[in-house]
Amino acid sequence: MNVDLPISFRELRYEDLPFLREMFYVSLFSVKGENAFPRDIIDKPHLARYHQDWGKAGDYGIVVHNERENIGAIWVRFFSKENPGYGFVEAAAPEMGIALKKEFRGKGLGRKLIGQLCVDLKAKGTSALSLSTDSRNPAMHLYKSCGFEEVEREEYSVKMYKKLE
Image (cartoon, rainbow, N blue to C red; front, side, top):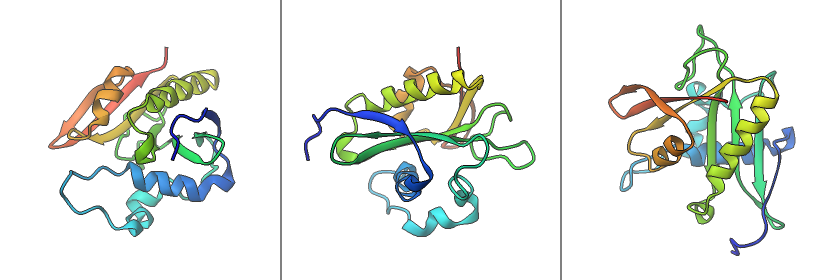
């Protein structure tokens, strides 16, 4: 697999739902050496709400691809105070998810995806983003370097928040 092919971004479309589901599964962090989650975990109600019925008002995402394949995605969905997601901070800040295929990690694509998402969301009038991650997730360094700040921590669960300026 050639990771040096030119990449480009495009808006996530409804027909990308199978790829979004795959990337959502890939985004679930598990500690090295522990068993991976079963694939059907993303269909459990507490997680399905992050991808089910994709295309609702406020849903937005970007796919990064090269000339051969889709290689990653970043997406957001709004939740409410009454029905919060794991990374809920405020109703005005959608929760972000991001994933890249393993062989494309560590090449700056995550940073580019976050940067493009921030530009696009700011243009749509969104003022902030939030996310939920595990404090042991190596991506914590990426999130912090992209301007996300910890706003809550409970054991290994971390909520992060970023103002779009």
